[in-house]
Length: 304
Image 1 (cartoon, rainbow, N blue to C red):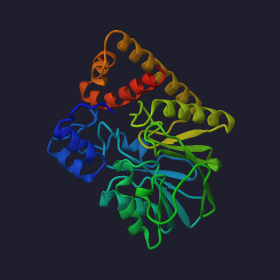
Image 2 (cartoon, rainbow, N blue to C red; image 1 turned 45 degrees about the vertical axis):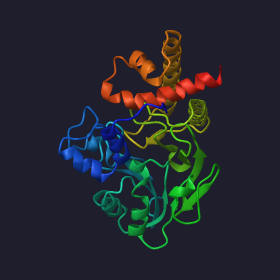
Image 3 (cartoon, rainbow, N blue to C red; image 1 turned 30 degrees about the vertical axis):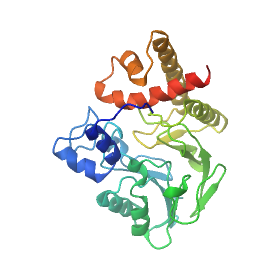
Image 4 (cartoon, rainbow, N blue to C red; image 1 turned 180 degrees about the horizontal axis):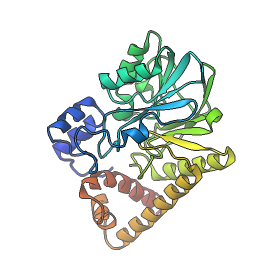
């Protein structure tokens, strides 16, 4: 990230993004990160996203729409048909109403494990509370030890089995350094967290080189395993994984070329590059764009 000073209101909103606190503030008209197409208190494309999924996976959409969370955070309940035990991926914000609604959708089944795709609060803040609500002994597994509840973490190549379900763990750094995906072979589906979104592109906190490698790896997986769908952390499901990943790679390369051109034109900071490359983008999105541009500048610097 760049070294610019972030305005207090914006910094506070980022910290609260994905939590019920920001949603309540939004009702009073204050939310610097509100998605420009969503009005306060609305659930966005809830009818399209909430309840979507595959034979084994169902989305429960969190009520936290914003500029940074799109229509809200997608929580995933995953279980074999007829099984009495499920896994829950990304319980979402620490919002009691949302967490209770997840349990309502789980129904009479038992939650065997809670899994996190990455550390951001709109995905992880409610994990510990949800595990407690789900019953004694329910653990939270994450790549970053700070977000675990219990002794088990996540690592590349892990196979998670619960209620006859099989999920394979892929480490996919780039969006964050602790990002993971879950490959569900039975449905030919990949849970991508924020690495690939249902629409738009993601913000990078990690290294661009890592992110490009991640996209290439997912594209290879899509071809080799005939992946049928990507189930993202925000936005609708993607039923053309290869096309979406090709688009992501093309977009990143195009943006990188634009950043290089801006640097040759004299831009030196992430903000200066954003003012050139993102001139036609809503300025409310510029702070988030700076994070990604800084990753691009670091990538160019690493390569001389």
